[in-house]
Amino acid sequence: MDVRAVTNEDTKEVSNEAASFDKARERIQIILAMPLKRQPSEAELDALAAEFRLLGRPGDVIRPWLQKQPVRIKTLVADDWSWATVADALTRAGNTYRTKRPWTGDGLKSQVRRAALPLLRAWLEAMDRRFAGISSWIP
Picture 1 (cartoon, one colour):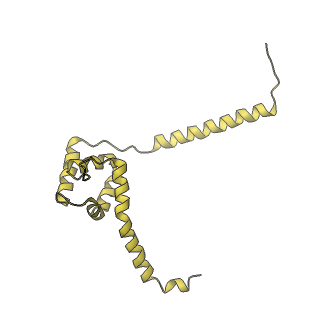
Picture 2: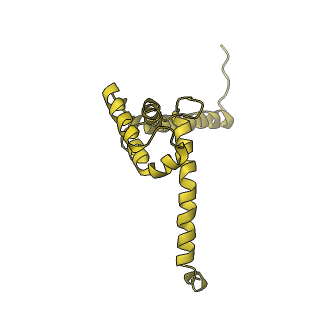
Picture 3: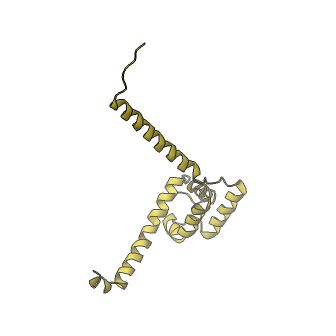
């Protein structure tokens, strides 16, 4: 029987493994506590697609259309729709890329952010003009 003495290094190694295990368990608990996005029914997807059809015309350029709809899309995602299901509804509505490629969740999220940039820039410029005199006396 091989018996060796327990050293300080052995106890440090065991305590490091226990600490990393505890961190992993905490991460898993956080992930499991996060609310999952529900999968909408086919009828709900068709209803959202019909709503998107009413908001635009065939052949609309997508970026200006997204600039007009960011609140609606972000509200859907904040509620319980995922980016992928909103993208599916957009594709069902006929709002696709020029190549007729369907939307993906990541693609839609990226395009919504890009569409919001000019609006954000305009708002920041307006705030800069509005408060231009204040910045001189702010410490």
